[in-house]
Length: 278
Image (cartoon, rainbow, N blue to C red; front, side, top):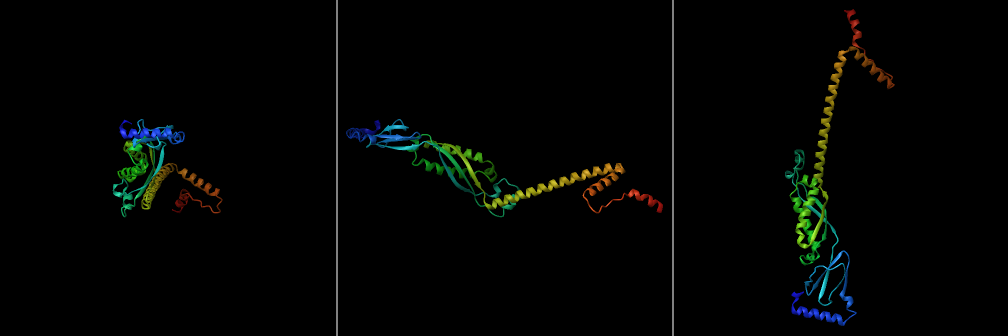
């Protein structure tokens, strides 16, 4: 208050005298109330009063020389508008099949949006150091999101969302420290892929599933052939085992109530007739 000068003190004393003369009417203009979640920055002749923010509760001002600004100290949430980021195939960590699919056309920009949670930590800095702290934080969040996404490829954007959010929070918190703002949390809300990219990724996934299915089918055929080979070796050691297998096959066919049964005749039964003809 000592910096307001002689003229300032004269105005302050005149304001006090005017307030005393007009009592009790002037008391309603001097008493102000701020809520629990608010703080008041008082300006006297354009200078912030010593002691910083006032509140919560009652405080007094001089009607002619003082003015004040209320600052909300609660956590504020806002959505970051979708930011377009253009990705090219040659910079992404993708397979050769996917690269061939998407390299015939340039991919359109993908859109990424998020949510920022912040609060005013120092009401005095939020009023004295910046014109509009809320608007400045919103614009800075948009720019920071674009800058962070510009250093990532497609695979990293889809998989490292938490890392992107932490990087944004650290950058925003450092940049808004001089404004008296504390960035509490940043979250990446949605990643919208362009239609071309979705089709290319679906084609790659379908090709990968078909390739795995063919490999599994080939492995099954190989295992089945090995089992048949082992079975044939067991049957070759005992000729009667083949006859038992014939009878088991007949039993299975009869259980299905078929009208026609094909009975495989063992070749051993024909050997006696062959010898007699000779």
